[in-house]
Length: 227
Image 1 (cartoon, rainbow, N blue to C red):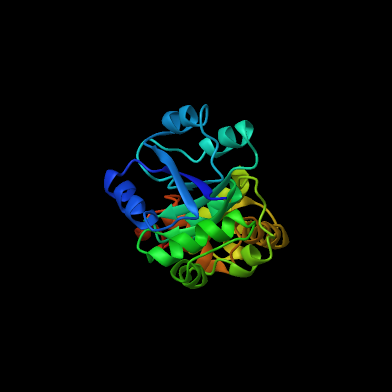
Image 2: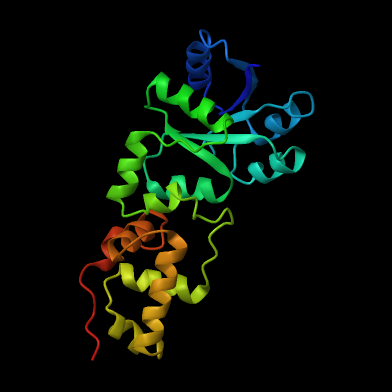
């Protein structure tokens, strides 16, 4: 039986490209393409796919629609496809229920493989994304071992404050002095932040902070001295 697929991406060019890729795939049946969250939910009133090929960064889409889709039918699986090249995009998608991920620049073969493997219940990540995550110090092993939570990342106000200060270049001792807490407490916060974000070191925190807009690149240059 053919795998039933819906495309969720507002780019007409991308939709046409996927349709061309699928023309010779007898084992994948394209049910249609949605241009927004609302269109996707309307389509599910008449068609239940096995897989949704989804770019949550596309215009008129939000990652929150995944939960609404799962409420309609929990068996539907998501394959994320993105033009973004950051590990953080992939991690956010996975934590919200996306099972596999490929880039829009990936080959037709990789996209087809992602759909088929995800339908089988497996995870699939294209090689370029795996390499990018390693470069950003994102823990690929956590993904491969399914150790990532499917819950959104919940960072406390204190943790966000410490992330900002780490990204600005402050040491543990300086952070402790500024926040009137102990070095040990700062170190505990740092370990919790690394664990929640699925990254391995300070460089990963800095990159995440810049990409998320917590700091701008010039905010960790020329820091004031702490007496």
